[in-house]
Image 1 (cartoon, rainbow, N blue to C red):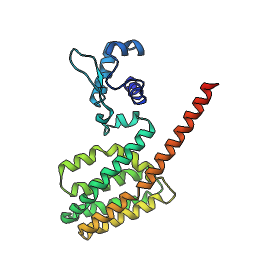
Image 2: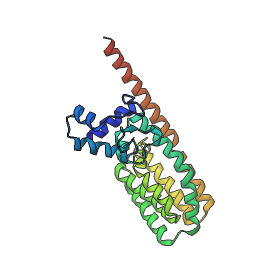
Image 3: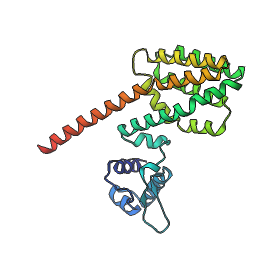
Image 4: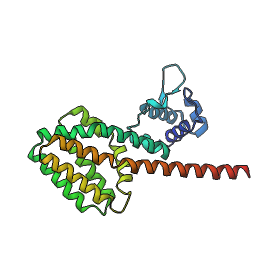
Amino acid sequence: MQVAAHLTRRIVSGEIEEGKAPSELDISREFGVSRVVARETLKILASLDIVDIAQGRRVTVRPTSEWDYLSPLLVEWLPEELVDELLQELLQVRVLLEPELAAKAAVGITDETLARLRAELDRMAGLEDDPEAYLEVDHEFHMEICRAANNRILDRIMHSARWLGTASRRITNQASSDSLHSATRAHAEVFAALEARDPDAAREVMRAHLLANSPILAAKEQQTKRASTRQEGRASSVSSQ
């Protein structure tokens, strides 16, 4: 895992060019590991769609656009500025999907589902001083709505994006001192529309709730870029000395 993480970061940084990848022997020699470990490293990278391993041919690096960005492993290994970009893209996907999921859920939502959502909402109100616990309840609230829409494919899509969703919520839920209180209020508006079984209102309040996170994520992305620029400047200054 450590070797795979290191190689991934080198590929992202451009040290290893697209289309080229180290062989088992290269990995074994550079990192001082056995051929078995080197082989397993390449299997991990292949499972993330980072490399292709063809029988009898050299391992090749796949285009970065084809990597499995829904994998929690890959999210952990990527540089912060790239993760920030992915979180912006995740928000775009959520804005496309979740308002319609909320509208669909509002049409056929059951009393049992409403009771579970009410319980999650009450838990949010009691966890506004605990961001880490809050984000788990936040995620479950949205997944409950997704399940109420009764579409198994969309449910799996939403489930697969949960790791990026957690990373996004860690940023938006801690943006200001009243972020969690504002989030609870927004979720309460979504719940009210669902309870009224009003699909148009559910669609609109869900969209508004999600779009409120856009400036927060954009600000975080700019902050990361500025920090990266400063770090590069310091490194350049040290190297010139």
